[in-house]
Length: 204
Image (cartoon, rainbow, N blue to C red; front, side):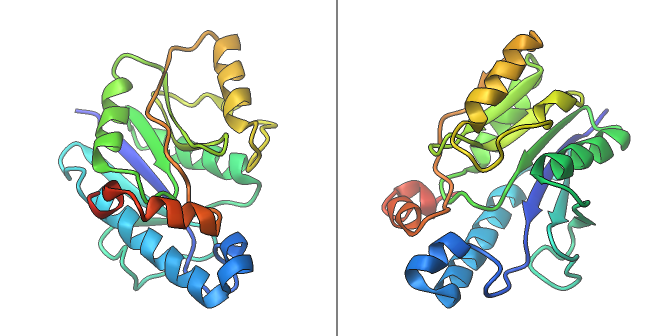
């Protein structure tokens, strides 16, 4: 039976190199602590996907850490290029292993829950693409059953128009798609404060 593949994009929690927008408010030390919390939370969420039927690969944005909380997971290095280039190659690599569906998430969302991952893979049984919209106009999750290259080409990465442009590409290509519930990525200090007030952040 073909496997479903989960991709997780991460960075190593190096002070001064992660959550720099949060650091503008609370400093780099606190920002790095918050990113460590995000990594641990993402690990907990992804770990709840059953091992049977799924592969899980952590893609590092800087270097592969051989001794961290992801020990025991498949590890890979993100290739060169912008976010779209890196995501496209990660999808290509996972499909090349024989995966029947591939979903990618980052490590920025304290309200993501394991049920969102399960729903994404379930929706891909009847849709070509699944998206998890983020409240900043982007998305926290993307999944597909085969590589759709235009979704990664010349897109406004890290801009509020990303989701709108992505939907326009999907419609133009006449692809069947489904949307998960909107969630908030933790990019600003205010995002962190807001998500910490929700019960879901305590129950992945």
